[in-house]
Length: 257
Image 1 (cartoon, one colour):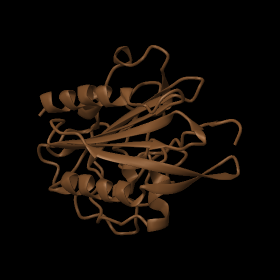
Image 2 (tube, rainbow, N blue to C red):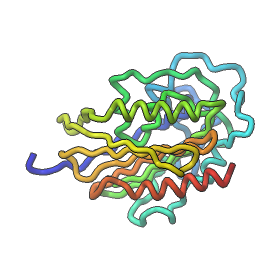
Image 3 (spheres, rainbow, N blue to C red):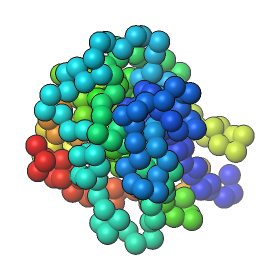
Image 4 (tube, one colour):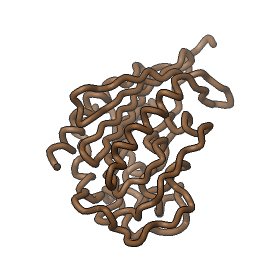
C-alpha cells in the first residue's frame, strides 16, 4: 500500500457485566450495574466468551466477601488529570457494577476463531472467558482515534489467576492474526512479554501492522483478586505510554487492598 492506515479501534462492552442495560447488552436489566460517573450510560454487556446460558449459582453475592464493588473500583481508576491533556473522557465507555456484584457464572471458553478479534479493542479482557464479580471502566479518546481505556475487575476465588493465564494463552496463540478494516484484511503481529515487578503478575502485548500508523499496547496486571486491564491505541507510536499509566493504576489497586 502507498499509504498506511489509521488503525480503527474496536469499542467493546465490558465482559464483566453479564446482565446490563447498555445498548450493546442483553435486554434483561441488572439492578447492580450502574454508571461510574453521572454522565455515563448505566450498565454494560456480556462478551462472546464470558456470557453463556449457564444458570447463575444461587445468591448474587456468593463468594464476594472482601472483594471491592464497582464503586470502590471506580475510585481506583486514573483521573483525567493523570492522562495526556489531548484525551477526553468518553461517557459512553464509562460503566461499573456500582454497589452490587454480578452473579457467578461458569467459565465459558471463547471460540478459537473469535479470540484474536477480541484482542483488537478495549474489551480485550473478554478473551479470558471468565466473568468478574465486579468491575469499573472508562475510556479516554481524541479526534485522531488515539485512546486510553482502563478497566478494573474483581474476581471470586482463584479466577483472577485463571484470567491472567487465559490472556497469556490468547495473546500467544494470536502472535499473527488477520484484522478486517474498511473491507480489507490486514496482518497484525502481537509482541508479548512479561512485566516483572508490576503487581503480583503482569504482561504486555504490543499489536502492530505494516499497514497501520502507530499501534496498540495492551497491559494486564493482577493485584490479588483484582485484574487491571488497559488498552492504549496511538496513531503515532505503539501506545507504550500506556504502560506507565498502567503501573500507576496498579499502585492504586494495591493501595486499596
